[in-house]
Image (tube, rainbow, N blue to C red):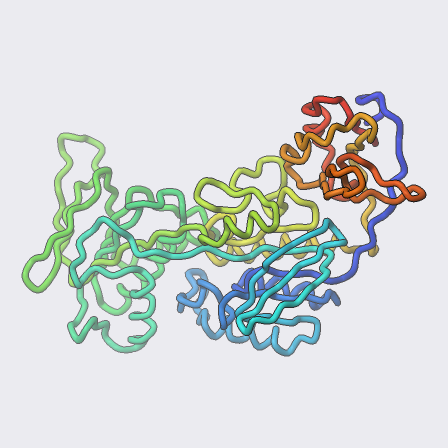
Length: 436
């Protein structure tokens, strides 16, 4: 088919040998889940975690929204499984300094907090660095306004006891959502989950949101349960007004659930405690990671944010996969789905111990190449490489030797090429051709 489309000849491609070795960047629940599943398949896994403990941002959670299990106990069991698995090696306080090569021939330089360096040669790399959480801004700084993470901790500490905050009983609470991240589901999930627990403790709860997001497995069921328990829900258009009132705090909101605009009233919600949905942002270190790994990043630093060409776990470089909140903040259930999707992709890639390019690949005609770097700069897959060639004082690619000569030109790595044809279209010397 490709011969008909491009009018090209077929060229033989040598298979790229693959080892059952995978490098995972990030030791959160996604990275640990991928490591555990791959290790069970006999794959040697190295986890690089920048912190001194495993768990990532999920360590702040205490309760699942869809089951009664304790998050910390579940995570502790997962960590214990990893520590007892012979195919998994964890590097804590470590950082990826450099990543060279392509699929099957990656060379990763890892530095650790004690000043040591280690070189790894994985066949594939999984990025699962997660995201960061910031307190919501723009509201009252009163002492009775807390974030959802603090409420999670408060509920875990009180357990079977009446809820109290700084020695004061909490009988009413209001959750305020959607002040910043209108498209992230985590604040809604946490708010409704915590509201149900509070209501069961005898606390009257109200949830104020611009748009409740329940498009997660099990969330509509939890929302109905919250309504049955007596949780009040209010929809707003203009942000609510928070003010101190004696020993408590008042939240005023115009209820948008009334369809007739003239009949809408401002509702005042007296509260002992106001819980504000926190904001989520890409890890600031993502930009450096993108530079090292030659990945694409969105405006906010999220990895492969605009990724319409591939499955959500596949990156712009063959052999590098993404999972979890490094791409977009997810609830735990969605992140675990991505983790299992990555496991299947890695298993399919490593199966058979070799990779042979099946799609069309670009090839450079050496005599025509002016080494202008146009193709190198434009290639979205980092498939074209150049190195200094001292004899002629120009840059050339590290091609296979043909006698004692090397190409004085750019060179496309067939295993890394996706056959998109951008380099073919943009080469000013018309030195690149797409072959099957």
